[in-house]
Length: 334
Image (cartoon, rainbow, N blue to C red):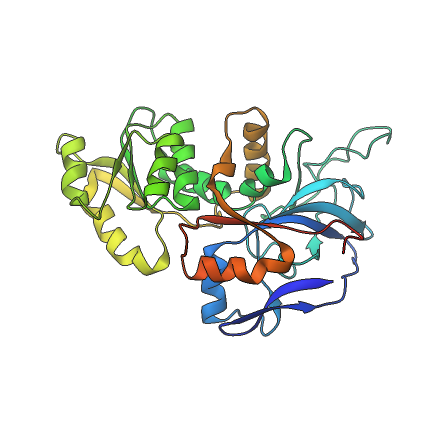
């Protein structure tokens, strides 16, 4: 199989690897689609602790290819979201044609295989990060991808922020995680929602996803403008969702715009609270019901054989890129 790896710090490539074999309570998933994340770029630049030729990626959807002993509650051929937002939920990264995934016994999210009598087994003890979440038939692979990373991170930030209905919130940065945080804030009834973003495409998406107003830091004093918008009191919560390079400045701005007793929350692409698998399941249900349509965040699409080009664009922040979609070949193609 082919995998997109970090050969050494700063050097990425597509190389051949062996198709993994599942051990006890493990599953092998054939990846059908993935998203590239800015955290993949940051990890490649600083080097990953796992060492050379580590496969990158942690936002993927695929089909169960094989199950090891004790990997119950799933079935071969089932569509699944991989990882639930966590970059360490798989034994290697997910930008590969096949990935090996730890699979908790008695998986609580999964139905029985079609035609199997009885009910699903009751869940046994499971790790905090549930690693595979079944994808509803009405949800496309493209839609489901957002539940594995950006939306999971954005929803986790909104949960940590304890947003209150009808109370003001500012979301600094409207990349994929910031936009997802804006979506979550709108669903939780917060408002007004103030998005802080200088990119025109991202500004338009912020308004589409529920922001009430956009403050452009390239042309306005962000803190002064937000104080004007809130009558001088500031926002209940400021959620910082910018890239790592801009984080110190954004954190300072966030502290200046919160009301007395308000809070600052830092969002990330990987959700870090609660059970990510359960959160992923909730997000998939929201997508299925039509309450979320996240795919407008996808600005570019590439076949897996051009994943290197997708990485270059993301690393260079070129061409207004937000999220690149990577589509994998069907079995036997090519």
